[in-house]
Figure 1: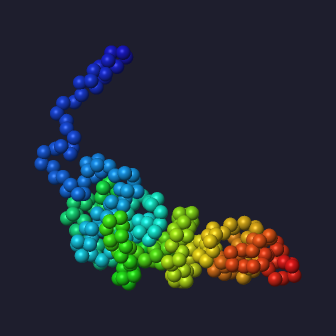
Figure 2 (figure 1 turned 120 degrees about the horizontal axis):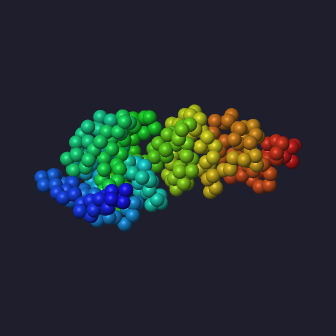
Figure 3 (figure 1 turned 120 degrees about the vertical axis):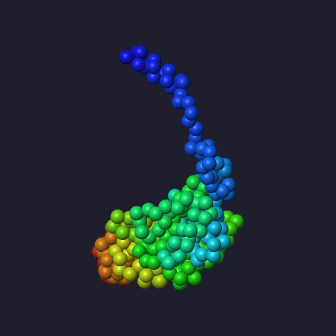
Length: 285
């Protein structure tokens, strides 16, 4: 047994001759210097900066190609004034009929493009970051009207079309489902963009889907306090007076009319509901 160990150690010291790194292989094509990975062109300051640089580069490529598109996702929130705490990739919206031409433009610019199992997007890589080119938002096709509503905003030093705040919030809220329902990720975005969003249209476009309705039970755009606790101390003042978690008669439209069950007024109200009834009743007096 000791002899085998010595042979293994000797083999490791000697190494395997004739091997070279894949990127040094003669004749292998390399990516243009502007689109090289961070390991080749120098690491960005941090992950957020790498995502922003990827958004700038892909935005310039799409603009030069003459394509209709709009920036979406966390980078779009950043462009509208959100925080710089970005998510894991860059999202762009294009019309389904433009997908093939957009893919050809990205490949011509030296970006690797691949087709994931999902049939509503293609993926590219820029500066080591994932770039999603999306044809559908919340199971609805990206339309010309949606791209027409996009606003041209600066993303770092590059101006590009950015999804309108109303469409951006709708795409996040309408995507909620029984398997994906992280309100905590969307509430800060709703807080930042609340003055720019047409909330009536967001509610109307979400329809009667239960998960978006649950979100609106917890979110009041007209209140400085945007997270409403759903405990027994919170009761609906407009429909049935029962605790908000069990109040579905308003289908999520009672979010701005809740009051702590005792003690102080709620976001919109001036009265306080008692544990036994709605404000203004004999039980609350």
